[in-house]
Length: 449
Picture 1 (tube, rainbow, N blue to C red):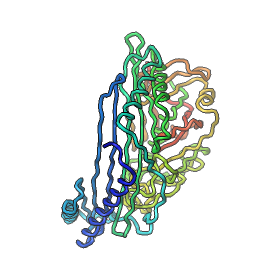
Picture 2 (spheres, rainbow, N blue to C red):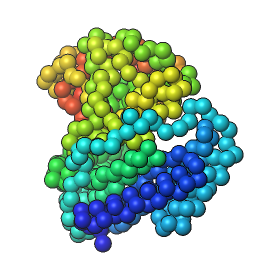
Picture 3 (cartoon, rainbow, N blue to C red):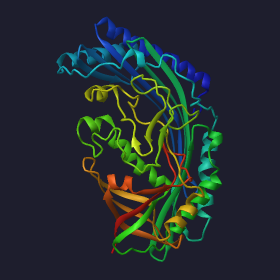
Picture 4 (tube, helix red, strand yellow):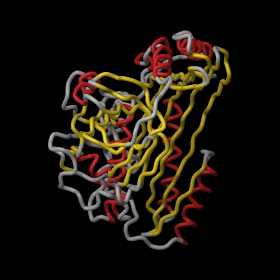
């Protein structure tokens, strides 16, 4: 059965909380402090190709992971069997491991004062009863509209619809046991277009926690077709330095490199090009990033991190200045600081636009240069900031897209790329944990012919 009701999920939620409490009690009886996390995901995935059902998959996966601390020695274990005897075995395994590990003065639970004992309801779960037939129909409809969008569409890589519900439980020996439900729905389609002997592919997708908020299969299909045809007959560029716009869904990756560079793990290992930059200007003085973990139904919203620490609003970048690192309990202690609630990742980064009028306006501002719509491969040095990636996109002349380009490489230093940002458009990409518009840089080295 593909569909699980909210009532059934809530019953499972209670059972998982009980499993967490059993594990914590066993650890405490052995004289240890401990934290336990359980994730459970159930749902349906269907894929079609050439408007025929190709695959139907049901999944129902879950596991319990426990970390125990005997003084400053840590042991981990996990189990996918949540029967009491299996939980006991996992706890005993973790305790046995802890006895043989080296002491680490920085290990241990986050402070009790930081625990999310009363987490907010962020409306991360939206029930939707979707049958296998409906799921297949959605995928086929998206693919149909893509295949029939243009006569140059000659083949399909398929369409996929996913519907998943999740339960997350976290508990520790501070007395915290909290949990929440979540849902996620997505529809994607990828097709192939031909120009003579040359083939190009592209795709489109929609994703939301609320099924009712998904874009229509017609839109997904048509957009997949349009984007694929637009890539046909790409040209190569001469090597040189040009202005570059990172299209919004590519720009998320650029900002993602910033997140990686200010994460505690990279910083305490001294493996970041933004080492010791806290409180310094690393971006233009108009540039701002706010983190908002409590956006209702947000794809990256969370009431607490994977250590039970309450999530809260952060100003990551203000007037171009780095306002905070991204720290877990461990990395915070290593750096002599407090966790920022980022165990498990970032939560809804909002990059503030400083231009209106969407991509069209940004293209006009750039005039002549490169619009990057796809990145390929990766050669990024996190220590030095050296950046080199394959790319594809469109050459722009007089503010208008002239022709597609491929087989080029973009190179630079991330420090310089951040400082040389000219504008962020208001064409915000909402399908990522980083929400940004397209980003214009004044110049980058492009290696072509």
